[in-house]
Image 1 (cartoon, rainbow, N blue to C red):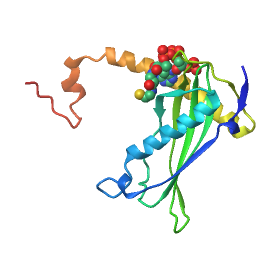
Image 2: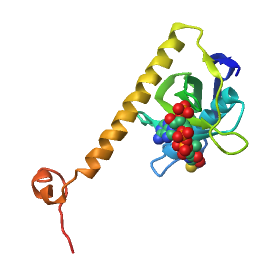
Image 3: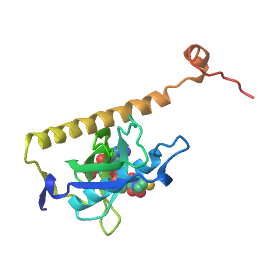
Amino acid sequence: MTSKAVRESKTTITELMIPSYANFGGKIHGGILLSLMDKVAYATSSKHAGTYCVTVSVDKVEFLQPVEVGELVSLHASVNYVGRTSLVVGIRVEAQNVKTGKIKHTNSCYFTMVAKGDDDKPALVPELILENNEEVKRFIEAMRMREIKSKVREVMEDAKSEIDVSSAPELLKDERCRVIYS
Ligand SMILES: CC(C)(COP(=O)(O)OP(=O)(O)OC[C@H]1O[C@@H](n2cnc3c(N)ncnc32)[C@H](O)[C@@H]1OP(=O)(O)O)[C@@H](O)C(=O)NCCC(=O)NCCS
């Protein structure tokens, strides 16, 4: 199977934030930004895989600063990691005020995508050629994150099965909830 360099699938999408994208507070809806992230993740992963990809999981989406109507939002994406059939796309989201030229970094997040073959089954993706220290660092980070996520999934499954509802009064006594069964 062929190998491809990170630079070959790097993608940037820039979109103007128009008034119909705003919420009642006048800021851009989180869902608009999520949709743009999904699009750029799809474009980047499909370019690398050479086939259609689907979104499996999304990590570290945080809306740390509001995005305003009239700003230009750019999403810079690249493949950080490839497994057998999955790819992790890292996305840096920036919003630019066109009048001042000031750019704010609103969020960096990670989309795990899976390549699909014509039979709709997960398909092998090309190896990733890493050409500088930054790309090597991102690959190792994503590799570690994949291991951590897998452990967290196991721990959460165990934690769920161990929940004893009879201990709720003690467990929840300092929480902001009230248990009222009808
Ligand atoms: C993604 C999907 C194909 C995985 O199917 P599956 O039967 O679990 O396939 P596999 O076990 O062979 O896993 C395929 C890859 O997905 C990865 N994967 C599966 N579940 C995952 C999860 N929760 N988080 C991250 N990666 C995951 C596996 O690690 C594997 O990667 P690798 O080949 O690089 O090692 C399947 O869950 C699917 O089609 N989901 C719907 C996706 C979709 O429609 N998205 C659009 C939004 S609705």
